[in-house]
Length: 110
Length: 114
Image 1 (cartoon, each protein chain N blue to C red):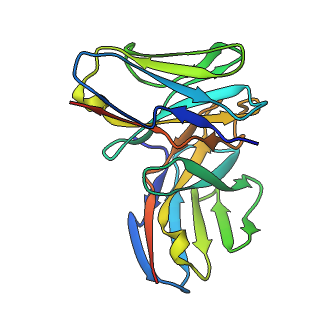
Image 2: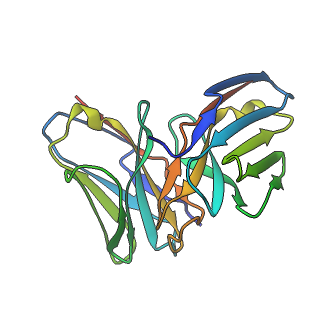
Image 3: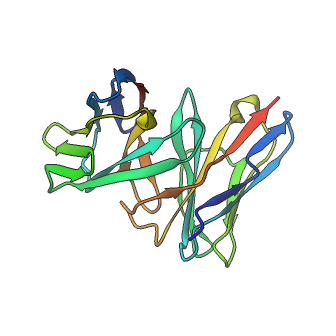
């Protein structure tokens, strides 16, 4: 099974609203990353948060990490139709290997 | 700088055939990883190559193999194709492949096995 599990599986919101998606993982990590995937395409790296960080911002993205609960959340503020995509959390597991969650499919309606 | 290039973009094969997929990493990147993505299993790690050596391997049968050339380009091969091998195969590159390093993905090869 996947190391990370995303919640919710699917999310549909209106343009301008905020979108929050959560990720849980099972074993200890040094860092956690979030990626975005547009339909049928490759993944694009969004942000990395280290285990000693609790919150990180990048543009309209805010990521939090709670290592005691083994969970992370990704908040996209003021969403746009172009944010429609699947979002995955990823935990590194050795050379060139990351374990990806099942993903949250976000639909932003114009 | 050009991104990660995967060829072909689409491929249709029949059961029992074999297939070779190609990946050209970002210039200067020496680590190449391969992932299989299916609706049922999600993203699963296949293997990782660095300086022509496989350093890491996922839980896939021996029908799945790969190699890396001296210019860091990589190929993966699937022999004796099964219907369940239908998937999007993604290649990712990074500078050194160190744990936690950002991965740069190609657009993938969509393989359909009939």
